[in-house]
Length: 510
Image (tube, rainbow, N blue to C red; front, side, top):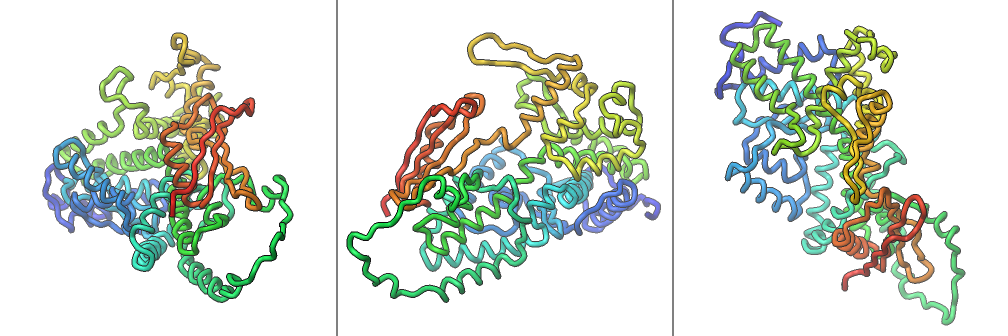
């Protein structure tokens, strides 16, 4: 890069222009790619207003989204809170797409524009492109075209079948979104040709449909052989954890357009699934990257002293971890823990102590901190990352310990700062970031299509945590409306198979 001129140098203050923005981007890019060795999608930086940022919030961050009343409700709520000073807005939103779209607010100062480009356009971007979960579960090259197709398809359904019918279907699908993902992939997600496949499915349906079958009389007294439960489950591929997938393929009364809408919602849920599993790592990676880049820009003279102080003030607030008795405490701050772990891994790689050499023999003294970090960012998710890399030194620094609460007796500190305690703390914290253990384990286990067509689901209850009855009742009603017949959900203790609670719902009148 060329020498920094006084005109180009970033200073504290609100004023900036697009020439400065380009200069900052070019210098960030040079540090990120040449010095840190990051590998990114091409960036598309878009400067937006506060109102546009609120709009992006409401539609879960995607630039193209079908219409639904809940998005408008969310926009109205967030706008009211923002206008009354009760909530601030994010400095940026970044989209896992190719090119990677980064929204930055025009109200940001030049220092903040530099910070958020380093954070999002390079930190998050590198993580999206290189983490194996995202490679396996998402299609960055196809998501924008797919969302354009989804928006157009839902709008066409509203015109053809009515807004009320489409809204009711989306209400039900959104209620089941958390149970609309597959934890183990059937195939890599490929959204590029999804519109073409939808047209092929519609053409095949028209080709094979024959209205004469509707008029064929059924023989009086004819009986069909009932399939036994084991054979029935085999034919239906049960048990099935992805409820939206099962409904899309097997629900008896859904029309083709309804199945396609369920497929859209299911693909959207699957697209966001890796983000639920990597929030700590993703934010830790982006925060560590922006910290390294901003410090390097200051060393090069691109950030003056006032700009560096503004950056450090913002960065310190982001990685603040309030104590448990602080009014601001709301659990572990993923930015604080993620950034601390990235710094700790870099320390272990470059300057390990004797304890590090025992706990981390593979990386202690490796020398190249960025190589170790890039390898970790590619191959782990939050749960496995904590289980592998949380060090005793960081446990002591953050004063972590485990507490046992059975709801009856006094709280019991079960793990302290000794070797066994470190492993217990690390395992407990990893479990807290494990999506599989934090979300209900619900599966469809039977569907009697030869009889009353009742759908049977099972919730495997761990640690005695049952579903909230009111929530279960509402979601089960949506499920019954999609299935078209009665549904039953049984909550079963995972260790003893004892039935703890049963919920039932029937379809709403059509």
